[in-house]
Image 1 (tube, one colour):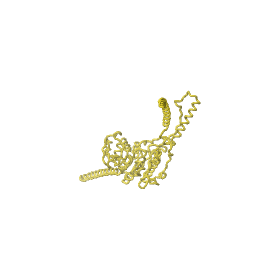
Image 2: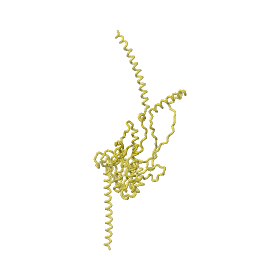
Image 3: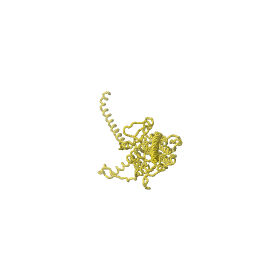
Image 4: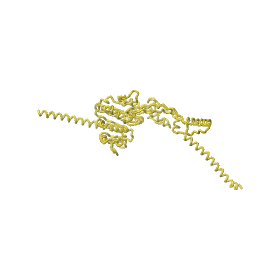
Length: 424
């Protein structure tokens, strides 16, 4: 009898279970919808910023508790450890801001090295800049414009690096020799070159953007047929929820909005190189000009060639490019420029091949050889000795040509005098 009752009850039980499942599913659906709605309102990036410490960082290397040792390596003054980027776990943006703050101090440190160690001076550009006008600067050796023999011009790549730097990353994580232009400058001065250090990335003045007054506009979805009192209560309730939500997940680090004011005639790397050529290099007394250009600096040099081909060809003896970003095809260089670069330029590029190994080029280009490293930022430093050997060979060839020309002139004059004497 019990079994017959259960059999009779089965349909009812099944119906009850289905109904309960439907109710549970409906409740789960509402919870899921609510959860999705909540997640849609959360900006995960903003949520990650919620617990960030203030963007207040030390102003000097001493305050950062870092210093360069006798090998030019950046080390912690207490632990002796190299620089650690992830000073605080799970706070990438804060760590990046800290790294950038240290980078600004490094920039000033390199300027001090240029002035105190290399005895270089700043030259303001534009040369006729007004007192209230945005300006930049380059660095000149004492004899930059007066040395009658040799002049070395250094052009860095793009990015955050400033005058005297090849790569900030190398300065911080490796050493000063690999990341700065100091070894190139000191070696050049030892070998009788004057030096001009360009600053192609200092091409704008960054100022705080004036705040704009907030404007409030009515939502296009407002229900104008609702009673005013009911609408106000509803708006107050919704407004309170929004304020509580965004207060909970707001970003406490409100960065200052800035705008950039370009520096006259130096608003880009290409403009800067052209300007320095016209106002400094072209006016220098040196008979022989040599150039080292890294990455985007190579592209800027090729643009200079496009605009001042005759002048550059007459004055520049040799160009050492390091992993240059130029393209003679895309930059629409002339056939004469291509021929000149074939004869006077060499590009040390990132490659797994041993240093100075000749490399094939798919397009018409200057000779390419291996820099002995696959790291782009290291190509200048790894090619250091090869570059000065390249320049030395060019200098030697030039001196031989000049000696031969002088000898020919003397021989011609001697023959002329001898002929006159015989006639008499």
